[in-house]
Length: 295
Image (cartoon, rainbow, N blue to C red; front, side, top):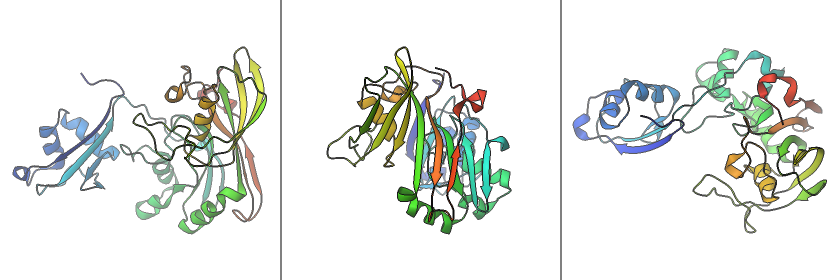
């Protein structure tokens, strides 16, 4: 029986004797997975042949190819819907990302990610569909405002000016509540994850800077407003954990169990020259009951 939510990352070399076989037939014979499961993995984008993603189950092998198969069992995807669109201007699109949606492709998944689903909604195909990219990223389990762009030139311009022209603000629920009401956190964070996929504070790591402020307290929990002044991966999650008040639902960093990660990007302000004029948006995590923002 396959373990629920099991992650598989397997590598193998196709025997020369399998030359002429279809990819799905060869992998089903070599691995302990059904042909149907293999074909699903191929369609999702989790199969690589000689380091290149391949989505053709019927591709004929020559023998000697290096295969990588990446799968996550028991995964529930949250589809994109038109109601998530907040603003659209030319090649730019601002959405309300839901917790659980992929902001970008993952090793095991191209199908079902927001860029792929939004490209299909926009009617983009082929190379045009591949040009749609997130300007900035949110972790899969984080909800909130996310900007995408389908113009490489504009995307490069936005990202080049992002650090100086953009302010993002998040809401987070933590437990236990911090003793302080307001704090500037400047712990540096290691550049690489550890074997458990976590980042950690490291004096020799990359500089990080977060402003944190308590908005509300309920028993031993608190609602915080977090403003990252740098854009490191997992920065807010690492900083809260290091302060002894991990974010609810963040099991990776010691947070207590919760139906979702209680982290939401609720405010985004973009100033010139990133955009031609100042743009400011806010969206509450409680605007959609499906977000399950309960604490």
